[in-house]
Structures are given as structure tokens and as C-alpha cells.
Length: 380
Image 1 (cartoon, rainbow, N blue to C red):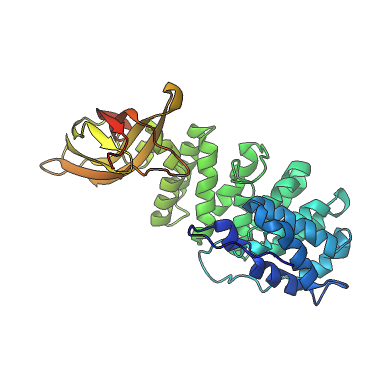
Image 2 (tube, helix red, strand yellow):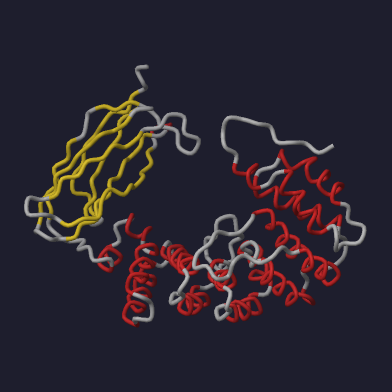
């Protein structure tokens, strides 16, 4: 008997994306097209383990169940898979999400079955499935095993009329794709793809281009700054969208205070500015840190103001996080900014530790004022 998800007070992304209702929906797509396929039996087997697994493991488990309930090699199952696909996502939009995660196992199923002899069929199937759910993770094994053939297909996808397929070309080749296998492609292999797609008229594609560049920037910041400089000079993208791509691609470098990135965004990293910072001496875990700063400098100068907190960690270690504060221009009487930073207790991703902390105000990538505060346990 199929298990059902336990109800709890917290939101569960994995249960929202993969649950019995969605598994049954997937089974109903295959039932009319796969000989001997029984939807109830498939759903029951998937549910015997799925709720005990994390999100990525659920994709793998469903793909494994598909292989058992629709047996055969890739040429055998390909007609069944194609017939079972739901209608494509709306190709007339200019932005969209991945599609429905329940179709992610289809890509893993393809990569599990693909061989040297049928790799082109495998790429054909990814091209079709990605119009229902993004196949960037499934493309990675192709790039690892057959980089030349895969990149040839990627180049063809750059000109496809469907923006989901164009987006696969840049997203699937990203150096640091979340959840995806590392492929280690040389940047000169993927930059021509980005050069063809940064002019795209859909944000879904240009966002992927910017994310791809942000990945590259972690290894070669100068290459990214120069690439964006060249693209701006070409004038092939609308000024507004080019500005958005540039800012999104350089976000990591801006946090790091990279002078070339800041200058490309119109912020002088060497500008003169005097900053006065007012910060309390103590703050409570579970409470908030309220601070304010006054910035004096040349009237009309553009400033990108961030703040950086050095957190106390167990064992005497520290960690640093950078947060956005304001993009503005200095007025005739300067610029005054304030911020309430929440100090959430018992956060699952970052646990606060009592002890000495440091707050720094950054103007155009440089620390201009600093103050220490003691983080203490809540009195309540």
C-alpha cells in the first residue's frame, strides 16, 4: 500500500515537488503507451521508498522505477517516452520556471540508458523533454562522455525557436551548475555559446547567460569583465537588458569588491568618501541589529553601499557574509542610510554563536567604517 506524506507544520519543498499525486500523474501518462505498464503498481513501488529520500535522491529513485516498469534499451523505450510526454510549456512567453519537477526523472532515465551508439537519440530526447522540464542536469553526462558531439548539438540549440531549448544550451554547460556534475569545460568552449545568447529577447535565457558568467568569474574575473565590456560596445542587446545582465553576472565580483566589476557598473572604487557608522555595542540572538551610517562625498557620485558582518564561529573561527544595503547618489548634504538586520535564532542554514562580531560598511567595494558588537544569548 502506498505511503502518504506526513503532515507537519513546516513547508517541505521535496514533498511539494514529489508526492503521491504527482507520481500518479506521471504513471497515468505512461499507462496508455507502455505495454504491461500498470499505473497503480508503479505508483505503489515509488511510494515504498520515496518519502524517506531527499529531493535529488527522489529523482534517481523514480528513474530507477521507470526502468523496471518500462524495460528495454534507449531505442526501445524512446517511442514510449515520446508518446507519454505532456504538452510542451508555453513557448510564447519571455520568462518561465523549470516546469514540473516530476518530469526530471525522465532525463535521468535517458542518461542511464544512453550509449555511444545512441547518443544522438539521447540528445534528441533531452531536446524534447526540456520543453516540459529543464534538462540541464541530464546534459552533463553527455558533456563528460562525448564533449565534442554534445557541444555540436549545443551550438545548434542556440538558434532554436523554443526558448527553453536555447536556455538549455547555456544552463547545461555552466561550470558550477547546482546539483549538476562538474564537467570542467574550458571557458573558450562555452563563451561562444554565451556570445550568441546574450542577445536573446527572453529573460529566462539571459538570466542563464548571466549566471554562467558569474560562475566563470569565480575562476577568471578579468575574462568576465572584458567579455561584458565587449558586449556593451557591440550594442546588440537593449541597453536596459544589457545593464541587467551585467549587474547579475558581476554580483559575485561586486561582493568581493573587484575594481573592474565596480567600474563597469559605474561605481568608482577609488572615490573619496567619509563614512560615520553608529552601531550598538550589543545585540541579542533572535533579535535585531539596528545601525545607521552617514556618507559624505562628491555630490552626485554614484555609490554602491553594502555591509559586511564577520561572525563568530565555534572553535574561535570566523566567517564573513556580505549584504546589500543601497545603490544611490550622494546628495548635497551627503547620504544617510539605516538598516535593521535580523539575527534569527535556530536557523537551519546558519547558526548564530555568541561572541565578538564585526560590522563594516562598504562603499564601492571598500570598507570605509567599522564597528564591533557583542552578540549575546537572548535574555528571554
